[in-house]
Length: 389
Image (cartoon, rainbow, N blue to C red):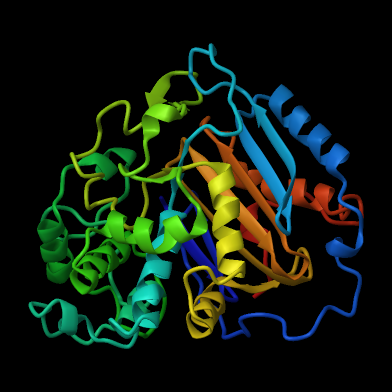
């Protein structure tokens, strides 16, 4: 759950370094169809894409990939093992940790509350947290969503900025404690002055969602977003995980890191508030495809709500030369990323469970092969090079 980058409005959550750049405003969607040929105009190269994934598996990659166009799944692939001992082959329907993709759901939940009139994205923080001190009381919910609130990324128990470690995710912290720590933390810059990634800011957003909706964060996200989208295998503790294989995360040495649910790293109602709202959800690749289809089909947003979400989530991809949206997340062991080529309605999801073999390092090249762009002078790209500024 390490990084959130917004390039020209495209949400991109990465498990890499933490620097953040500021986007400029872009239209939410392309109002006119592309005049130049796009990947959608070419037949999908499913066989070539499958060979690419097979080669990745031969090189030690462990994970899944799902690709869809419109409402049709065109490719599902699994390789590697779901346990570090190498006894269980990965299945397409297995459950992976999806990290900071959770932030996309938190953002959508806040926009949904605004869409329903329960709050405004321009509300000052003090409306929902009356104890907010003078330096933070006028931070807006929009600034929290856009990482423009001036908050530090990771905080210790005194509200002081610290470096991230994976163990920090699992230190028990309550909602009250995270609220107190964020409100006591020193601002890194004046709210609205620039953008800097903040996990703490998204934990605070999750707390605001609970205050506005009078509903536990996961329950609100599940009932208002996941259920209309048909996503039964994404969440913290609400899904029935007993019916699914929970993939183990494996270190580069092959040593078992495990899974937060099977290893009991969470509190009874979900993860620590160090993690809640900013990361830590588990899910399947098929559910992330359903998420993108639900956004496209306006299954929980009004037209205005959808436009608000897309303005933040969609921008021009310099790689694919069309409107696109991407999100990724991980903890240095697990990694997941989705890519939605909006103009051609192509949706690609990759997930991985072995340190050193990240889904986001392969998804762009995989999508280029799938869409027939490979070999046209486009070098291998990671997700960080997805879109133009």
